[in-house]
Length: 419
Image (cartoon, rainbow, N blue to C red):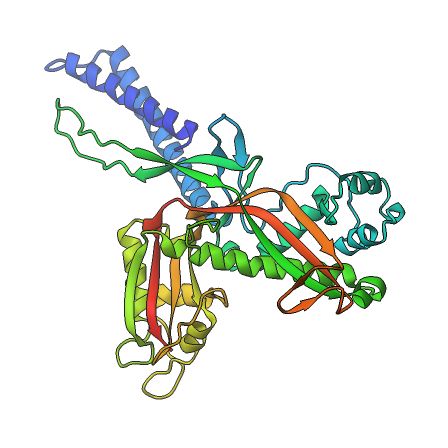
């Protein structure tokens, strides 16, 4: 309610109280000319206020209709334990850049300079790179390049597309307060105390863990390809995005691996059948949505993420006449906006089974600490080959990441779907 609306309501109430007092004092007697004139003035002003209040109410209703709906893309602001304000990033936001050094360069430019030792082509960045590069050929990408790689990886990450929030971490750890249980409203009778209900909080700790990817490129690509920068950057971002999705959804939380969504105490719908079975169809998704409603999850921000094989099964559903099966109205938007990922496995068996996740992904955090580090080598080898032998350049990129689920009750896994 606006300040003008509240003031008009208060003014109307005061005038009506004044009129009641005048009429009460005149009980059994005629009003004096002065009092009668005052009553007429009050009636006139109340009518004007009633008209103003109706206009203000319509204006507020219109503004409510035009306002950004709850759950629309956007990211919250957190406050760290040290009092710092931390601006989180939604799927359309970009990683912050701390300085302009390296702007306009590509990863290929920097890798080529590090391999040849000729830093003249990377301008003023050359001195800091040559001084800071270790014997293994490793270095930290300058802020603009690091941010661009992380932004590209985030754009390719299905969980981010679904609404997961990215939290930049200035150090290796970050503690965030979250709601453990909501307050419960209560009703009171006159002169009695309002029932109390505590809102409890818990702390979630983000601890950066290294996530690395290995990209192999040919010497020819690095030396002669006009689009080497784009190819290398996309390869690193795509590989990193796939691993981020896998860990975000299925990370064990053991040893060096963060804890993913599937290993939190989220809701569950066990299908143990194929979607094409008689009576199944979209029933499992409707049941999952019902669990989210029971948990008061934000339905407007809900997203559906499934495996590629489950997506294919959903696309293959038909009705009794052989026509594509239409989902119920409440599910139509979710099905249309469905996201699929190869990071969700299909488990071999007779028959194979797979799963999906339905939930408000704005309640899932991805903590990113620092930038992307790069190491390059012409001599590295593993069981599959050798950079030296195959005339390749191996590029290892890694970042420091962790995940946190703010409200597990706002997610449901749909499991054991036979495909």
